[in-house]
Image (cartoon, rainbow, N blue to C red; front, side, top):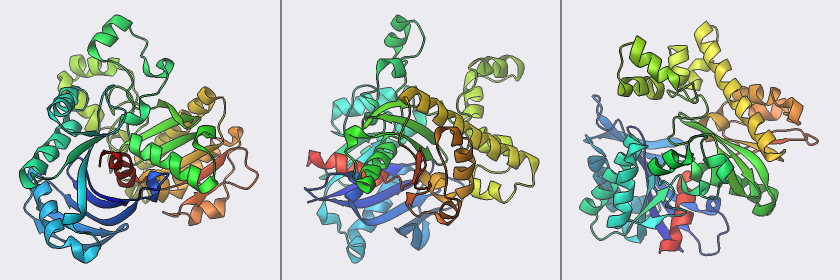
Length: 404
């Protein structure tokens, strides 16, 4: 048995989970989360806050000083040293700290102990994920500062996609140009999609190598993965996490010439145009109200909010349809992530568009299933529909445990 500390940096937050992994586990979802905490509003104008979580509920919360991810890492480690033993986990139990890194390029197919070479690679890949990888590096360096004796590993979101076929990962560009500059589809949200696959295998008692499905990670960032014989065959995100589905603030796939139009006609530079596509588009940009589907669902009487939700569901259904074609059919569609687990209306709209493929929801089960994992489709549906939790921390711990 091994106990790991999993650190997952977000845009302005840092989540910590202490996870117990048993030697006889088959899947990441069987890991046990012993305690969880989070620091939010890092570096923002309003005060940062610390929260201890019990499942999805906040057990305690208070303001803290955290102007950087270095500060936030120190806050979480101090809390773990001083208080976590009261909640089922102690600092002295932790054998390894694993930090989620969004972009691992084409080098890493599993978590790695951070040495100078690994750190250099993470830093070099900042050109494709500048904000994400920079935060992970700051957390890694903060661990060295605040816990100098702790082993540190990096877990890469891109690892799950290292076996994607070339027909899926290669862009239709001149190969000599693309290869020179590392331009290819890398895929993201790998820990989430792998956890959905493994939980489905556990629930259905099916061997991984026989499973063919489409998994959906629907949160502020959204992606779809086509899985063939238990292996990732494609992912809707690409060179960066901007490609693919419409998201909270990201546009997803658009005509790349839009950047030229924004530069030439709207007076922006390339950085400004990319900021629009990354931070001012998607659900937030179309609705003009919020990136949060829970807010937009209450505003469906507003034309722009209604359009945003309709576009979002259309984007998801279109991607699932494309992957069903690419796979030559599938046995299931899995909804995961906050939106996938929490929004019956989104699932219903997407599945209505997929009736041609055999998706037939049990409407009453779907309405009741809010953060309740299980099968949502009717018993005789040709395409099964499930909602399952995307257990990223548990998956990172399971894959990193081999390092200790």
